[in-house]
Image (cartoon, each protein chain N blue to C red):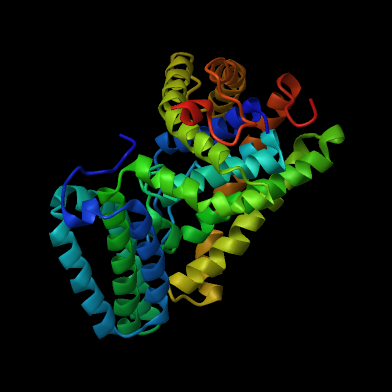
Length: 180
Length: 209
């Protein structure tokens, strides 16, 4: 890994942290706020690819775990990682990897629609597959209940996937980074 | 404000970062192995004792806890109405102990000490292709870049607000991304110009210093 790659990785971890500037939306009776921040996962995966993208998310998660208040609402610390919503945050590492892997495979014929599908598979499905059982376990909830509680985030996440796909496509045209 | 560290010279502050992080890991695992309201209440008392020993200002502790406290109430209400209020109390106590311990470590440990511990913890992973000094370097880079990126994001927000585009996610995101990618080239040149070579095991300044 070159210094340039390291800089890209560090910049995308910082970019994800900078997204905390946008305020969260806290729906009542749901133990997870809706944040703009997880768009960073989709962007890191679809712009940097699997290896660099997941590394950027790993750096971000490590810094949150050791106590930097980088999550929306200035949250951070090991307690957040182990708390009810911790699974959603930890899942960002494999999620960015899956998005990146799919984008690398489809790089030569990348358009808005297949980017959107990649971001929904990696950036939404992977996140929910890890986050929901985690929420159920930590909060002593039934799995079905945890699924129901999490469904209200789907419209917001779909919108974020669409925005990330548009942005990644524009960046691919001006600054292709995966197979430059 | 990037570090939450509250300076002090209490016994909790003076404990090295490594043992503190290890204790946090162990405690957080053990918490899920035991159950019962009396046990968790006793743990809460013990943690309160640790906070007393650390002599932390109440304001900092509460500030860290407030966002978490907001979702303890719905968790309790969920159990009170759906399962059993005793399970609700137990769950809330467990989460509270966990959060308090994490806040304690966070507020009493310097960020640079934690990064050193992480770098050391990653050392065994050398054999599977992880370079701990590179990882440490990248962690420091992220810490340096966060204020930079936040400033860029605010600048773009201002510029697009002047054009009436501040409600458009794409108009904010795309310039920020392009700027980021352009910056990466300059930044990596600057880092190498200062003698950093990613292929050496330790950064040059540490080998010679």
